[in-house]
Length: 245
Image (cartoon, rainbow, N blue to C red; front, top):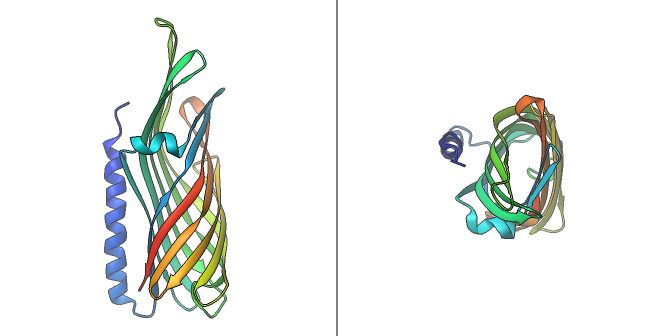
């Protein structure tokens, strides 16, 4: 499959927009506390299309990753704040499944833009709720060729974008001065048939530096061609580095 240049440009543009927005907002909003995080999400990828199921583990596709960007920018005031979270990946995988040779390619952009409300006095600590929008763009193709040739080739694919309303909550539990445990859950609906995710992280704080280790799971159901549905799941450990300013 020829990967979509549109998705590459969108991911690069979103990443640049995050940096520019953070810099300009920092200059104008000295009353806000800011946090920027870059992270690696070692996700296993699963997809069900029609009656066919395809699974690709991170260890299978990491050496085929063509491009990836994962980042989070957030600002908090005394009661309200906001964040942008962006995940982009481009990957491919080939394998034999029973009597077929299967090739899968994926370009995916996932971006959350949300406002947060925190009732506690300490920023980035305690319970929070958030709401906003989730943007999902998927360009994927699965090609299964039955062996031996010249048996038919079956193509299944999707190339669409979706925008949902997003609602969620999280809790940052202080363990001591340096350690936090963070749990979050969210769901969205709108253009997709529904998405949801859960995550848990341990965070070590040393001055402005933040070190994250945890686990994230995301599921999304989207409508493909001819009203057919595709179920996708992304699940695995995550490691990150953040800087507070």
